[in-house]
Image 1 (cartoon, rainbow, N blue to C red):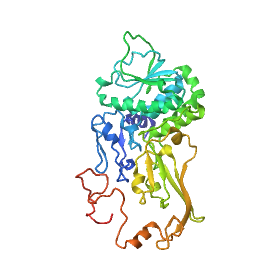
Image 2 (cartoon, rainbow, N blue to C red):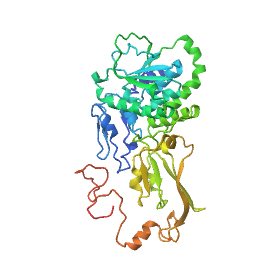
Image 3 (cartoon, rainbow, N blue to C red):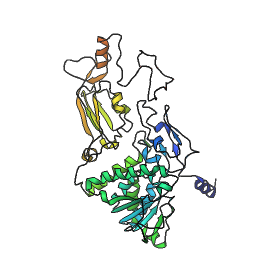
Image 4 (cartoon, rainbow, N blue to C red):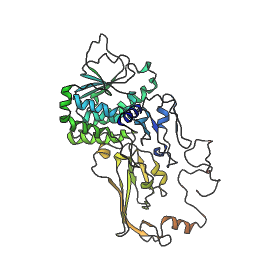
Length: 415
C-alpha cells in the first residue's frame, strides 16, 4: 500500500464516530451497580438501559458527544472537542473567551467583553466540567458558554446537562472564589454589536508567522495535551472528564492555593470510612472499578494497609456490596480539601495479619482469633452461609423489578 492510498483511508475514518466498549462499563463485572447516566442523557434514545449491560445503537447516534463526559468510566469512546479547544487557547492565550457549539446559527454575533469565540465540534454537553477547569488552568480568566439558542436546537434536551456541568465547574472554582469567571448566556443583550473573531477549533488557519512560532509553543501544547486527559491503555481508570479534573485542579492548586474549603455534595465523589471489623480480605480493592481502593498485604511481616485515593472514587458504592462484614461507610459530601489536596492516598485501615488455622487464608487478626470470619461463622452455623447485604431471594444483579436473570438462584439457596 502506498502512502497516498494510506492517507486516503485515514481521511475516511470518522474520528467523531462514537463507539461503546461494554467491557469498560461498570455493569460488566459489578452486578450491584445502578448507573444509568448514559441512558438518561442521550437525547435520541440511542442508549438503552442495562439488562444486564447497556446497548448502543450507532445508527441512531447524532454525535452530540454528551455521553463521553457523563460515563464515569469512559466506556464511550470518540475524539471529543476538548483537546483542540485547549490547543486553541494555548496558541492565542486569550483572557476572555466564548464557547459556541457547531449547531449555533448566530455564532457570528459576539458577547460583550469576550476577546474571541471558539466553535467546537458537537454539543456543549460533550465538554464536561473538567474541560472548563482546564481552561482556567491554562490561564483563561473568563469563560462564557453560549446557550442562547439551545431551546430551538435539535439537541435542546441537553440544556439541563450543560447547565449541570457549568454548575459543577463553578463549584470547583468556588475554592478560589472564582465562580463569577464562568457563566452561560441564554439571551443576547438588545442592540448587541460586539465584534470578535470566531475560530473553528477543529480547523484553525496557520500563517507563515505561526509556523515560526510553533516550536516556541510546544511546551504550551504539551501542557494542553496533558490537561486534556487522554486515557492511557490500562484496565482501571476513571473517565477523561475525571482525569481532566484531577490534572487541572492539581495545576491550579500548585500555582494558586485555594482560599476556602467547599463541599462536593452529590458530585460523584465520596469519603470512605472503614471500621475495626475490617478483615483485610481485599474484596473492596479488587472490585473497585477505578482502583481508588488499594490494599497492600505483607505476609512476611504479617501487616496490611488499606488505602484510598479520593480523587479517583466515583461514588459508585460497589465496595459496600463487596464488604461482607459491612465495615465500609460512604459519605457523598466530601470536602474539596479531602479529595484534591491530599498528596498521597489516605490510609483507611492498617494492622497485623494472622493465618486462619482452617483455610490458611490471611486475615486481619484480633486478640484471641485463630479462624478467619468465614471459617468462624461456619463453625457456629454448620449449614449456614454468609449472605451479601443486598441479596434478595429470586434476584441476581441490577435487574429491575420483574426482571429475572438466567443465573437466578432458587429461593433459599446459597449465592
